[in-house]
Length: 552
Image (tube, rainbow, N blue to C red; front, top):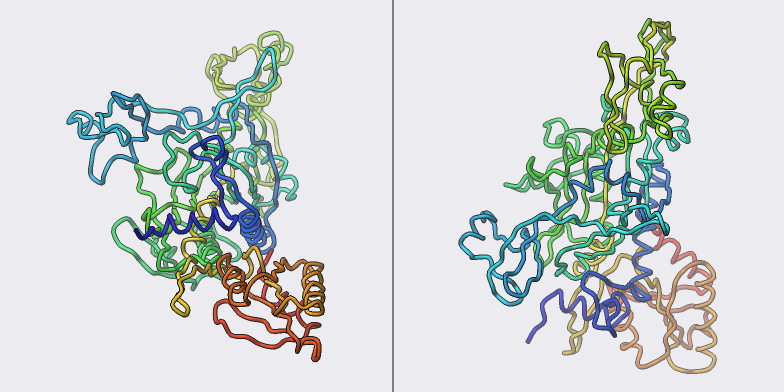
């Protein structure tokens, strides 16, 4: 029986040290995978290429924040209430399944449950009892009086809660971007797509903070003619980024710019452009925080179209939510050309009244009052930490003051490119996987681009001759000393050694032979063309640095 592409890729990935099922000797756990020696290096190379694009070329900052997140943060962000999937239960074996995974196009859940047409994938009994399930892993912080918390479902909230500090770091100027690369956690109901749906996964996210009235991008002119591959849920469109913005296919320059960055980056990883598209979210599938969102979908011959990157306009949702929840001043300023003096009414809190009334919350309530517009109501109402506070009239006064203003306050909007690293890694393997027949024998090849391949060069002595072995090991160590990852191999025929390197995506092989001892040259073989050329030993480091220049 011929294995399908997924089975072939995962068999190779396990055998050659890219991906292992976690805890396999204990029977494994669905939704968890390990990266082996080659997989970990491939992941690191992809993440470094991502960093190079966002940190060096786009001038973003990188931060790292905890993966454990207090309940209050994710309550404010909407994840406690909104981060759910509709689940159905088996009437017989009592297992739970994500309803979306079982419904075919055009089916309506309630109708199918009434007809009892939805069957348990395990025991074929009817499914029932649809109910929402929050996908976050819950935990607690501390002992004794424990504090509720979750494992983070995204890296973004750690960036948003630091926004006021990051804004100052950027000398209070917009736009600017902040990135984070790290782990996320989602307690998937029924993960059944291998590394495409994991419970612990790797993310690379950028949060680009911009003026809500100016969603241009300073580098957009560089990508204006770049052709994007779009799908509007009815038809596929090839259109330049400039035209897409002009025709309102994409809402603004900033979104279109990061779509160009994403497409260019993924295609440079070896993703097949014929199996790549941006799909626009319909209004009824937008996340609770999004104004517009485009997903990068990649095509698998086994799974079909799968979302791997989301590029969303999150508007001011998150920062506004954290301002409302904490009272922290996270506003920015849009500078005026010339400062102005205005008369305005201002709320002046009376701490001698607020303190006894609200005790530990008084400081935050004071900050929230000072940020509010005055009202003539007999008392004000504030939302803070998920609670409603009634602020009596006698606890503040409204005064008229003259104020010099250098700009107007605003809450920035956010453009977010969010990359699922594990899904991208699987598609790199599938899209670069090839079966090659040579002299009647079939073997496998990974066409990994040189800048992300875990091994840059295989180094071989032609035969196990002491002088050739010594020279080959010297070359191997010299390349490693210059940061070029190699693999030394002297076992089997030279053809077998080439095949082993081809199978793990190594772009070049170096063979040391007797001519090396005479002329100081080696044979360098190119994986993709199979062509060979003689190169001076002393030129090898420069040769590989040139060919690996894209590495981050």
